[in-house]
Length: 421
Image (tube, rainbow, N blue to C red):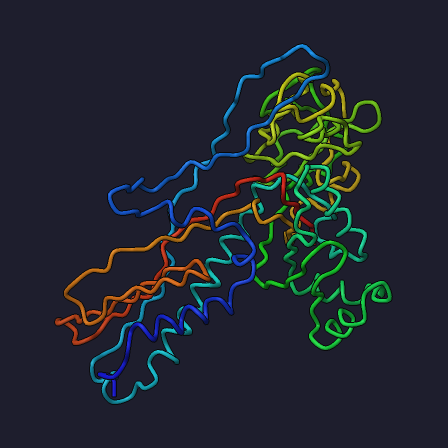
């Protein structure tokens, strides 16, 4: 019976199973798959993706040529997702039937879950944030705020429905928001029958149990923060911010934490990246390196995007320079609430445009001298999966490998938003 197994048929079925087990991966860009492993034109492990050039424009008749400043983002093939099976020849002959259905198809589901989870881990490169860490959104307003964050980042609106991927708790809450009277009858019926949101308020909703969780930095809560952390020095710019006022010698921020600066006249307000006008919203920054306050409560925080208040720059990010003494907030919370969020584990639900993230999957070589050595490419899914099986003479066993080679990259972080839960 095992001689009749068809590895190509197993792979084709496995790819279908992969598709059924992926959520996030199906909504992102796949434009770089064909840039790798091209015969006679192999580029290695990395391809540089070009981000559209930005300009400032002019008013009036006089020409004002602008220098073209290219932005490149490296997309790297760096992960081999796989599942291996070790089966003795006796078991293969005597006890194991429906090998493809029972073993390799379930293995492909594992691979799909790993890939999806790694994609959702890209949250840490996203600096737009709404919600409160550790609190599942309790109203639709949080999701409309997330939509506003993308609008203020000049995210394209050509697709009416951008993608929203949330965890089971968030989906359970959203179905109880009692706004269904605003939706067409079919959408209401589908929500009732399936327990899924479908399409609503500008989002295409999906649930994914692989939504990542972030641990908020300790924020000095081991010493019960006694004051607000502050900007230490006016007119700072670039990818770091000098601050003081933290509790002395305390761990404060983790990689991926979100900070904002000031309020009222001292606030760092974001600019729209196309019009360069004020969005009237606080610029949020992600922390790019863990930070600890020194014995005097000082800390230099590494951030993205950079602070750029140059009104002639195509990379301007804020309306004006930070003020000395401006208050630092973390996830929108001041020091009075640090004990509520410090160290909290918070699901990172995400709303995003397709071009915010990319998944590249490439074809592998198929080695010779094995029982099985096959690869199937499904253009519709943008997926190449390899199946190999070989005999270990020393142990009278056969090792089966099912695997996918690829890599994730955040291309346009401004076109994604994290939603705390």
